[in-house]
Length: 633
Ligand code: CDP
Ligand code: MG
Figure 1: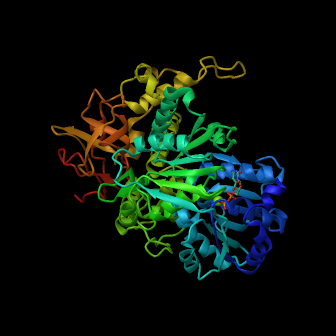
Figure 2: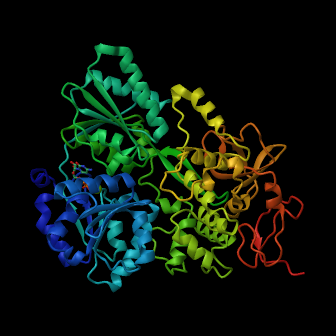
């Protein structure tokens, strides 16, 4: 381990780097992926006494996988058990202890730490890592940390980035010095296609096999956009290899994406057996956050999945978009870490020059800002327009977030946080879900609502639908069907998966939630509506339209309500694939009534703050739904 630590590109610069940290409060560090920034710098500073007295070095990562895997690696290098001196913290999982001094965490987790420790007093060093990714949370951390650094002169701030946009970070932090770690990269030859590829997935499969058959040894890395595409590609590759049989040397096909269980993720790091070749099919997670040794060939179709947000319709969607030139170059670089490499771009040289953006658009400019605004408000930052953003979010998005929080009752008409808003901010979930959970108290169904909230938060991973067992999977799902739609189905699945026989030590033999859902009508539609009244749609002759924006939408074919098409529905989320699909759809006999009932003056209706009335519906089906001050009589 010591040997491999010493062989990293960063090692010869150890003392120089430590001296620079000692001398400057803020340091921007630029170094290619794999040079040792994430794993080594925190250890160097630990060795130099920065953790004396139990002070912590915090390192943020945009991705959960990276936080976990890097912490595990550093624990090995330091010869300690993960969770002792070295730990990680990601949402819903805290693997740290009193002894933890090197703490890897997602950028979102550090942001939440401001709620309990606004000056981050227990940290001596904060390293904002993978800064070039410009995630929403990282961008906000820039502003917050710049602020606390002013009154905590001994706090050290490191901003680490893999690419060359460090000048901007330096300028933002009052011209902080930039420390460059020279890369040790082998040359990478870049090849383009002559004409655009119509089907890049098929092109990938064919190219992988061509490389495998014609090229000298070396592993292959393929960049695709998401789980479904990756699974399809892995399946196609395995099938073609099977068909070609013994005529081919062994090809190990391994996927990696954020939702892949961690045991399976670990497989990509295992060395390739002699005589075989490994192909790793990855999302852009493999661009910078994880490093796989042995890659010599990179296949880049030139796409990535990006969140986009329309302030006009309030709809967030994930869309496949061309990646940026910076990403493409980063991808190519992955081929030259161990030997001279080759990168095959499945697009034309013309497209690279003319169709790709220079750098990706920062997430803050294409995301829903509801959670963020709520968090900033609860940190006492009221003037969001003048917050020190590296790149400010679009004005309309900010306004829409404020409006939604107002409608949910989290802000008052002056834009100040309400008591409800404060409680919502404390829950690490998006505002609508938080409101639903808190509203459940009033309706006496907190247990049920928490279950539903948890089941809704697992990214549709409750029902597994493998391609070769579609019929089985679908009929299994139907077996969980209950009237009312997907929320109740999820509750039912959860309840049925609880142990039927309570353990003997339990003094209360039957838990109410263990009853089948039909006997437990406790889940109050009002509680769900209180959080999700924005997400409602009504069936008219032309199909469903959302109540708020009159946007045409469709029930997702996997929904329990797909064939029923009830007049009123409430959905958890909209996903935009071939159409705008509502996912996790519920209805209740009286949903229309709940939505249509005017709430008395001064009442707290679904989604309304105190003193507001919900004005939609009682105007005879008019489609404005809004919380408004009561009409004066
Ligand atoms: O942060 P940066 O990309 O500069 O490098 P790093 O993440 O510190 O990784 C340095 C080296 O540690 C990599 O080249 C890998 O060989 C190794 N590493 C590993 O084996 N397992 C990990 N989970 C992370 C890094
Ligand atoms: Mg790193």
